[in-house]
Length: 265
Ligand code: SF4
Image (tube, rainbow, N blue to C red):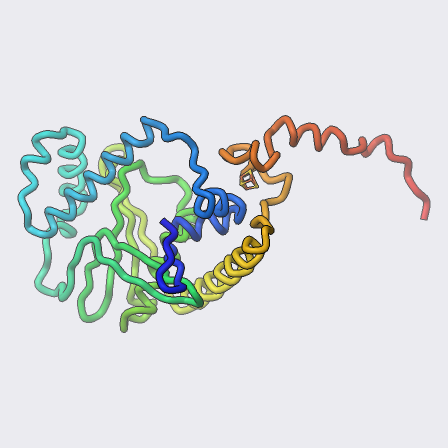
């Protein structure tokens, strides 16, 4: 949720992803709260995902989880798969000075309070590792995940709010529902990436400030280009007059290049 706290707007990676994808979508979703009717299948998956996160948190806190596992075979399979694939992550080692699930951090940039919640943060005197659980299969496109604001923001905030150098921070996603057994994707970090994220973050937040100022004067947030394929799959296509039929009409009304007479220079 986009919340306001004494002039500071709270933002998470979801806000940044949406703002970067299409500012108008951000306006419809967060300022006007125009959400599409919920999809029961999607909701069910979300509930199961939340339960897995809760289970991992309870386990980390040393609370009993057997009754949860016995009541749900899906959770049981995920948990045993994860325990086989990454047993070292489930047991604290003597070197680990710090381990905390649902670890919460904030960082103020401009008039915004950026918030991250790490599913698990493990750190020692040398390095820190951010872990994130995903209850969907491992995605094919690692580059896309690297560019997702969850990866960029989570790494950035830890480097900014701790004494660890970017080079000593990493982030690993675990996909418990992958084919066969849980699989992971890891990202290392470095100073150049950190500086790049700082620049991108500041640019995006400045864009948001400009958009919000315009919105106060009844100017809507900018849309993506009319030719963008994003509109074809967007729930706001009709509201934005970007339905496929309208798009086609627009393209068809363009003059046929072959019929345009060449003008001699
Ligand atoms: S239809 Fe296109 S312009 Fe409108 S919110 Fe969706 S992506 Fe943005």
